[in-house]
Image (cartoon, rainbow, N blue to C red; front, side, top):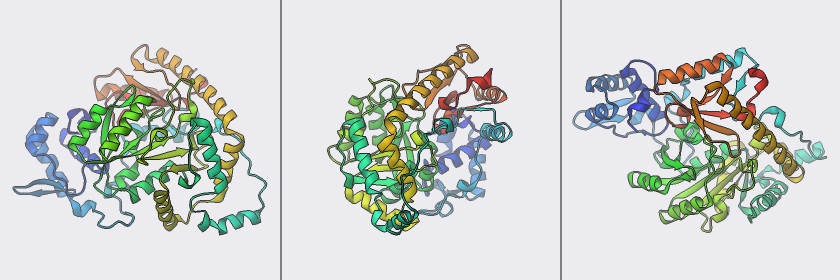
Length: 467
């Protein structure tokens, strides 16, 4: 992970870039409490910088208490500063730098543009556009019934039974997949599911594998939990077994977190053959899989491999996470987890301890959507998003004049593109030009990727704003 390509993404003099890189790795969980850094000589060699620069940067971090220098032993992440969770209870402590504003200069400029101008193409916004959100109405439920629902919330820890039945039907209709209602836990979205998993099934210092690049890389909850993230290389069919095997030889991966269908940010779809091969590999090495399926209902054609990995799982090694946020908007926070019954019951108890369960209103709205609207609405969404994607590609070809490469989106929300740049300065110039034209994108470095990569969420593309 110590390479100059990553170093140059930070601002300042070389020693400042290195201090920022070390802090970044600590925040991302790649360096954990008490871990030993490579020697000064190794760092200088890997980063192609002078050893004196390395010494200067490490001295600064030591003075600030982030690192500890031990004569004859090396340089270590200060375990007293970052803290280690010693028990199995919920880890409420965050790293000190977690509270600080670590936005890049580009992100700060983008945020300023959002505040100053409403007529922008915010292609960094990964949420469903408001004009695509369906109009849902609550069923005819009296206020007394709502009060009784809330009063009986302890009995509904796993979720509203009627909603769970609709999810059973949804999985059957969408994937011809049989799901036991008793193995469904209703959550307030994927973020809550991931939080519960990190607290119950993982501990600080555990290593997890993710796709490279991946939106998982940017999630603060992984860093807050003190987990170490290792990227698994991908090709057009998903993560490669060769990269997975290499990573496993170097690190004891406990769980693999995957977003295999219209992956965020790349938009790629893992083939069924690769899904089964990855599942078999993980089975043989006792690695669990967490599968995040947020976009499978948004395929632009009927021949794509949108079958979840969970459908091939015969040994209860996959935890499946579904969500409606990409279909009905993020404000109605409803998702679900499919896992062995003992796991979801334990996770429900943890959640009950934290926030006393789920509100009934979002569950009732989700039930209405799945019962009456999802087939026609998702068909409409697919049509609208495919049109937006084509409009975006037309504009990209015109604006960049062949100085950009990308694969046509297959579905979902995102187009992932490569700007043909050779330096961070060139990338910054192009991104600033986009900002001048009121266009905001997401940088690949936010997903752990290399220079020149950008993610564009085409649902928010509006060609009328660019005329």
